[in-house]
Length: 250
Image: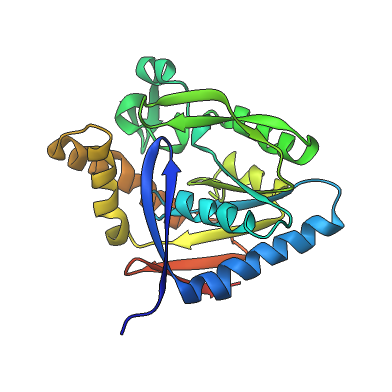
């Protein structure tokens, strides 16, 4: 008889997503982290910001929404899930600019999703605002239109879980962000564990199978390798194995 599981339905970047987690993981990892962040919030005057970083398709968006969902069920300090994908450059910018990747000049649209396709300066300003402002609005990346929607989310919760691929990237200027977080989680996922997810994601966004495979090889998997090779230490490390998370540090 298999382990008991919890099932949830979330909206991620404009798409419905079904998520399933082992009950043991929820009980021994998720709930204790929620209570830890609440204890921090009780002693601080500023918002608690948690970085949740991972390679693409490792499930960081749905995991952040799980924290948000469970924190809203008991009337205590609420957690709000936010993503860094709203800090992609606008699509009109991506379509008209090139970028240097691995020593080659490429059209930005061909490698969209790499660190260079994000507006780091804008993201950095907003991360600082999370600590300084009680209420603010946050941009969202909408996969249904493949572009950024400004002021899409009102941020008011005392605890924020900010998820993104490059929040713990140990490359300049990205490695300057970590000083603004109060806690950090990294999901370690082998390349093979996310490859099919990445292909299916592109197909869900409208790409033909051969196009999705080509983009995955040209861009997404390069980003996976880059993240795994250059990651700052995180306080909590989860490993994605056979579709489930296992705590290896924290």
